[in-house]
Image (cartoon, rainbow, N blue to C red; front, side, top):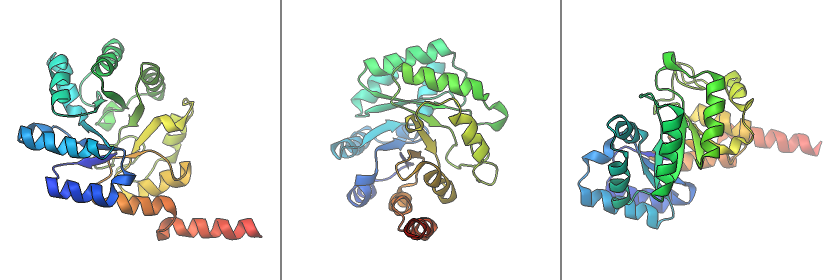
Length: 243
């Protein structure tokens, strides 16, 4: 899942031409969709979807729609603008479980792919591990395609990352302790060391999010073992397996 913070038409076209095969979802992050000319936004979304890539607005908009009780209007507008997926989050607002369940259903009823997120944007508001397990299980049961593990755009001081952006491996263990299939999760991991840690932990097909557009091919090289950080492990493994 790639973050688009304001790519123009030509930059987006170049991204898709060079790296589109390695992108599953492009998120027009935060509330940036509100600042485009409507025609430009529609053309961007059409370009993305015609390339076989999902496109969704940031979860911030969904939270505003819930807060202001305008979800129906929001979903209708998102459909008209060509979005194909909706992120359902409560990183800032409070959302009870009934509202969350009903929101997923309404998103699905409007023909979108539902992608939910668990976790708070402020570390002091972090969910208990029991609450995370419950929300992940319920979201998947209610029709969410994947569940994002919150780490914000910066990848520091939230979720599985400490203030320096280092991976808290024990936190991953705690999350996995209540998960049936790790492939149901998307780990927000904007920094290279985080991506490397998750690839080495889960394998090259781990679901990663909040990837900067300019890092897509570099990440694919990391996945495939043709970057020094992962080539060494692949090389050492190959040598040990022959001995």
